[in-house]
Amino acid sequence: MEKNREMLKEIEKKRKELGLSQVELAKRIGFSRGYYNMLVHGKKPVSDKLADQLQNVLQEYRKEKESGYGTRTEDPADCFRTADDVWNAGETGEMADEYIEENEDSIAFDPVEWITNLETRRKSYGVSQSEYAETAGINRSYYSVLLTGKKRATKKLLEHLEMVLEIFNPDKEMEILFDYVRIRFATTDERRVIEDVMNIRMQYMIEEAHSFYGYGRQYIYGDITVMVSPEHEKGILLELKGKGCRQFEAFLKVQKRTWYDFFRTAREMGAVFKRIDIAINDRAGILNIPELIV
Picture 1: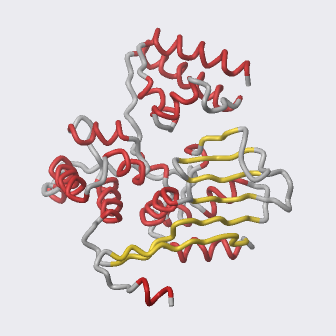
Picture 2 (picture 1 turned 180 degrees about the vertical axis):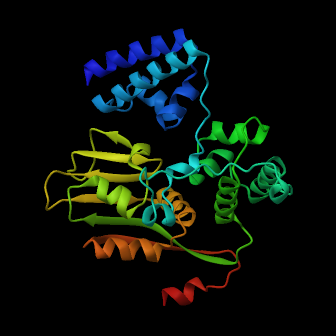
């Protein structure tokens, strides 16, 4: 690990020489600037795989700069594997680009107006940009670029943002939410759990060489945590706390799945449901707490 700390210092030096911002470097590797800062300041361990990925990003950026070619930022929604993507994937297994072309069929589609309306409602709901972007599975800097119109959003991404925003709608009288989920899978194959059960592309998960509850390492995406052990009796442990549940819930909706679909798939794989907490948000006073206690 100490070797990787020195390598990270060298990466920071090269990054500055190339004129690549921390925000852009973090975006290219698939995580937030805040997480990258924790790596730089030694608050998070740097695995060999992550160090190699950072080196590769810098090499690719150097080639782009030398050739004068700039790649577009990938649509964050592409990290989700939709139901159609899972069951009807082509030879490459990749989702097709869905950027809206200016034609007669899309003349009424105005991404700038759409996202401006989303921003107005976000403020009225009293949710911060950071929390909103994090729940939607994109970083705040990308969301800011969409707001300024410097990046053209796809209709698919905007519909995803619309759906996520309604999670925070305070006008809903009552909603029942999963607030904590812990599931153990009887396998040591993390790819099978992440890609086949959770339907998230493995390349977007950050691998860390440590974990909790006796597990040796873990994969994280925001507040979604998948813990891995080489021991079959421990298997793979998925832990979703409050924010993690909200993030994964947003992923399920963009995949056109429900919690029921996910739990059924996990059960078919022989998963053990270690703990599931349910929260009820009663904004209209429908429930009488004293009566419930009795």
